[in-house]
Length: 325
Image 1 (spheres, rainbow, N blue to C red):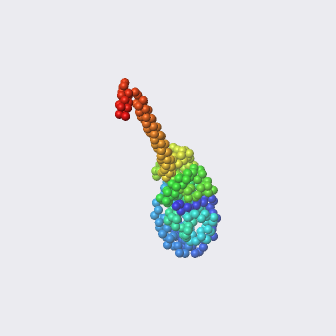
Image 2 (spheres, rainbow, N blue to C red):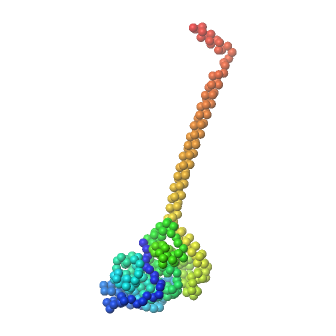
Image 3 (cartoon, rainbow, N blue to C red):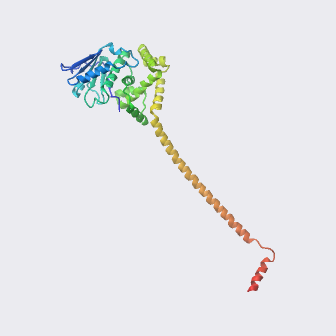
């Protein structure tokens, strides 16, 4: 459901680890150095070949990854992984240490296999490249969103996960996302999803050229907000409002449907109640009308029977009857 759930560690470069032993193998391609343990040479070679053919990272100089050596460790088991990346959360499928240009990727289950290893590697390389270009003060939401954009890891499952999160009312601000990664105020997978939508929206606002200019001006000015103003004519607050509106439009239709279903259910109940009430009133009016008509008919009969006939007609009739007797 989530992006290979990689954890970005932006603290100072970690000290040299003791996991390096003579048993390690090494493959070099450009500035990339892939170190592996016995039994993983084929995977390391395939990864090196695929990485060499990968397209440039969006918005960054094509040679940004060639600015210095990047070491990638393919950890064969949990013990090696923990020695290379102590304290890594259980959900991480890879880790980047951008300031020391070091990446740790697991090749064992259950950490490995959530995403193809090449996608996870590209995700982590994006962290390294972004730090090289913009420095270490890049907001966490932008780091994670950019890495997902660069790796192409977003898929239909992620979109559905976000739809259901929005259905539950979980659409946090960018500021809170910056805190969530560190403090766990929302689940990591949800924070990753929202981070991607924010960076992807920035990319769509200006296209590839506009996004490149944004990163160039960010590098020149040292901060995202003035770079946004100069490139897109937006403050960071204005961008966030537009982003939230865009997320609601693209991924909030499930919430709209749910709200529509509740609305139509309530409306149907109200119409049924109103129909029953009107039908009952109509019946009462018909009954009253029928009673009034019947009363008028009875009154008319009584009035007709009480009227006297023509003069002498009544006595003759009596005499006639009496004569018969």
